[in-house]
Image (cartoon, rainbow, N blue to C red; front, top):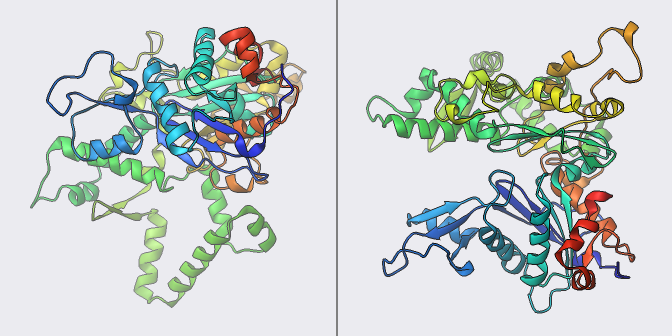
Length: 482
């Protein structure tokens, strides 16, 4: 413990996820969204410029990261791509070091010799103690960082939702993590996961689109057909474009859209929520429809009734219907994925895959009896899709009704009576549009702003602490213990 307090302008926040790494330097009064966001992958050339194969243990400078890797792949070079954090653990520290080095010194512009910035790092839950120690050693000895603190990702996400107890459901690219938290402590013995993520949902939607004749004729016309492999690749890319552009609507979003169409009565509320742009666009669309001919209006009503949309995809016009709203169904019914490629490789404890709602119910059931009501009182759905696809929490809440006490005559203090859905508060102005999706980064920024301004330094490891205690100091002085 040292009497050190750092300036907000020097603080570095790094969120390390399974597929993406986000970072920023400097914490303003209005917490900003990350200024750096790269894919959590590294690349190695299989052969060097002379055609000689690369050694088994490459040098750190031989890794390609960020834009260098993107340019090499776009140029068609022979690159082996690795994901150091793919399974929620750090299985390649050399690749991980290359990513962090690129972010600190290339993207954020820090200098190793005069590094006066403290860093708050957030990682997926469940990292081993020796992994924490190795991360601490790496940042002090290789990056010359001024101070280090580690925060578990689910805890940061819950802090962003202004809660201390809850159930965090993090929908990732290849898996969905379910983590109960009670009194600011991650319940590691209760945490679970579903080996289904957004990539599987894209494959499922591509399967549905394969039966849409209009889509197939647009992508592979009879006069210029493409191979089945290329068609499958384009269908998955189309499915990815559908959800990333916000064309997937669930129950909560559809109802809110219907309310918006009735008219705007509270202009102040619209301005506070930051929705003035969407309201203006809706108004312009209504005026254009009013000026259209009778045939055009009839066509517009037909499109609205069938819920059709037309997308620009690879210089082609593709029309989609309601099947796009089934995008997330595999999370709640994994059997829908049977027969699809790579599904048989997904093994969950040697048996059938359980739906997300059952995993949530069993995760909370493993917690202490007196903690379950508090955990159910904060259901927080996050992940890259949470800020784009609205209403995921409402759908999951309806599936969890089996685990909630339904008979009011049997109520007691230990039986949960409701599941309350959490969202990132709207007073975080920079996070109004992407708050739920960037919850881990927002929560880490909040914690960093608190702990690094503390002159007693109880929740971070300084250079003096590291010199006195070594890497083990991170186990005693961690912001996860807040």
